[in-house]
Image (tube, rainbow, N blue to C red; front, side, top):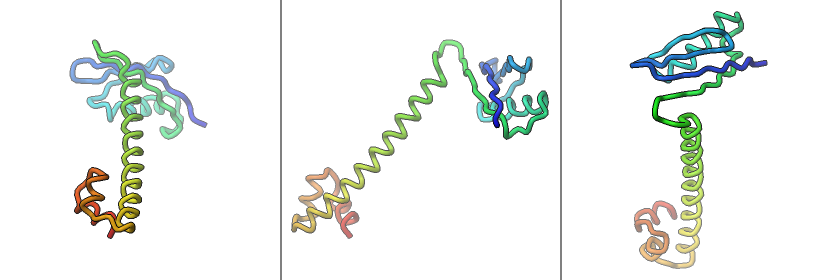
Length: 126
């Protein structure tokens, strides 16, 4: 069972200052990649529970920038959707290229239909 640990993370000069209200603790880290580990370590030291059992939730704040974590999550989600759409487009392109070539359509004409180079048609249909 994991233990939820909430932290407020904000920029303080060149450091990320981390407040962990439920534990009454404050820590800091130089980079965001080190923040979660610092929170887990403090939680471990205070509670004695293994580091792996903590579910860390961070409220990240930078003066003048709103909703950082939410906006970053939305961007990651959009990137994931874009990658999935790209994979689907590649598969659809390959399938239609094969159909066109099997129907006797030239590689150059297939390329024109699909908006790719004739060399790409050759790669897809070989």
